[in-house]
Length: 316
Ligand SMILES: Cc1cc2nc3c(=O)[nH]c(=O)nc-3n(C[C@H](O)[C@H](O)[C@H](O)COP(=O)(O)O)c2cc1C
Image (cartoon, rainbow, N blue to C red; front, side, top):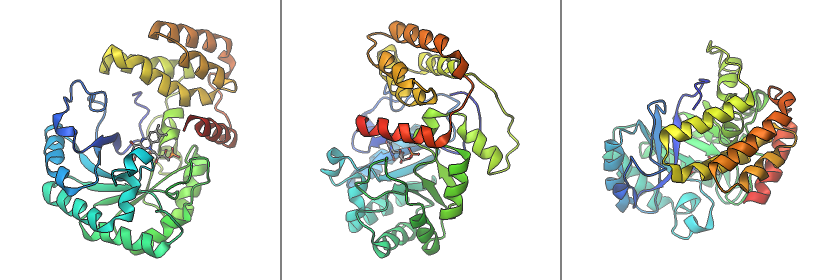
């Protein structure tokens, strides 16, 4: 969105493998892609190897740069169909899914898992080795058990155990909101890279900060005020999305971005209750004008994470 830099690979949200072949990539809000979004990995959600072939054919048409398989979504709706994190309970079916995906594409193939349903490291490691044996190129691990809420501390040490048993790159995910978190996570997990979820939306410049401080990248520092970042997001919405999606996407973004401000809940509530883009933009403008002294100051990580967790507990 803003060109801060520091991102090695982007990912789409999860996409239903069954529905994907019938989607129009120029219209679907999940598939619209700007030129800047590159390289882009597409994440497939499926519970069966039967849907993989057609879904991957579609991804080749969409010019996907990589394919990811969702094995971490804990939602009950998804679990009911045996997809998401439920795949970790169904290793035989999962093996077939990965084998089929591997057969159908030469693109880099990855999966994103959680730690499973309980503290059974042997089961977890056997599962990860199976994924590697079936030809996976990379594994992302969200370091929480199946039912653990985002408010729980991530369990990065489990990633170190996974690292011991497989050779493919392992990416650590969960609870990274600052340079300090990134350093700590890498130290504990020994992971080969990091994936940011909420931190990426709250602080889009965090990738660049981590790239510079932790990975010694020489990308230039781009100072930007928070209201300008917000305006930039709106510009990107206007450029890439049909108007019908603008307000929903702005509300979702504001939910996280507002955490940069001490009284951000007021910004989030004002935007949340807006009935049009114009109303939301006007309300946000008034908020920014009355909180201009906070526009540059980045808040301490602990405080930010605590509020983020509280906020998520109410949201999910
Ligand atoms: C609103 C929301 C939507 C998400 N959608 C997906 C998704 O489609 N696929 C996925 O693998 N993870 C999804 N996640 C999980 C994140 O990718 C990530 O694993 C999780 O937020 C923990 O990382 P974080 O602490 O850096 O946020 C989602 C998380 C949130 C909050």
